[in-house]
Length: 140
Length: 410
Image 1 (tube, each protein chain N blue to C red):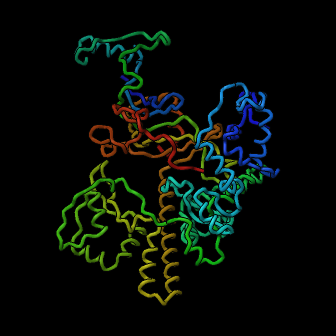
Image 2 (cartoon, rainbow over the protein chains, first blue to last red):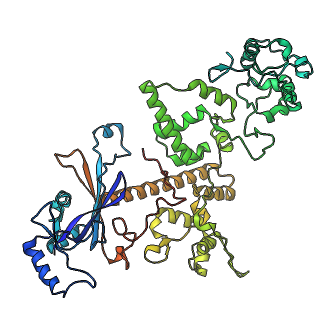
Image 3 (tube, rainbow over the protein chains, first blue to last red):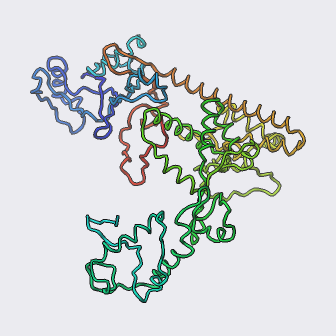
């Protein structure tokens, strides 16, 4: 099963706010993970109690098979940061500075934890990949 | 013009009904002066308002019912035409309150100033004075042009520090509006300033200090002091404000040596805390850890004024030296404050990475946070860890949640 680094939506309507989380993937590739899981689960050795093995084809992308449902906003393995997609206006600037100032987006991230999870094979989603690439130089 | 309601001309309700039995009509409310704005207009409302024949004895045009003139109403018009008439036009520079009527009758030429009570039946309502234009401009001049500190200007002018800051922002805004050619409600401002008590700008600085605009050294109420605590203390113990504040924050009592040190030089403790705010003791563990409540002497806005007053009472003759010592102390406080701000800013900047990608309209500010056992806590819900919490209900829609901003960022 793949561990992913992805965003998880919080906040209210029109006030989106994301946690950057490390969690189990919702979809896996059938040939690698799904099959193995299927084998494991069919023996019912590693199934949580009362859980039926589920293996559905994702028709949006038929190559992927849903092997384990982990809801988008369910409790993740770890929260390693946040991302506020709404641009903020910089304040406390002089008139001159205010003319050239760019609006900014707030991100908070524990770089060492991100590095660790990448090291053990966690796969960042496209959005998180872009966020991580902003601090690529510092993460080494 | 008579007043219109729903495009119909209606008689003015302030106009007295001129029945033959009314004493108001016999007194004949004679407002012949053309400058008499309000009542001059009222006299015109009569022909519009009475299409009925004059003997119908009513001021209501579409009703044949007689309107009863109550005694109170008659009294009101009698008063309006006699002693109340002088309130119609204000005397510039003096208040136009109804409670001033006796003072006016006694000293007709006196200019009334200072706080007064506009409502005779509500003595708790005090009309506080506002800053005059000159004082306001002087504050702006000192802070923005002469670069004096808000703290120093606040003490010299007797105006609260928050008000000094607000004055600077508002005057700045006014200047910008003038620059942009926006219309200003100047006649309105002038008229209001003529009618309410204002704090003038005095020529001599000592006058300004002796007649402050407001109390500048008020102790802000702290949440911890809301509790009513019965704390038994032995009679022999010297229980001070410092001890009281420790009781409020449930900190252990100080030792005798510490007590003796405090009693020897009380102002030194205040100075130390202002200089090294990180040396304040804390109580509680983990997320509950918080600095102990400081005594009232430390929490007031201008603690060094107490030391100044102590020195003045000890050496009443040495004006110049006292003043010098005060200025030095003020400079020290300002420097410590500046240092504290600079340190906080640097620490914030150290944790922040700013990235401005070439192909983006935005700047990204990436804050370094720590996810560890210490920050997330044993249940994973620690407040110091990043991100919104799981399993903790959001109470933002609950009753009593304050959502309005508590500070202004400009």
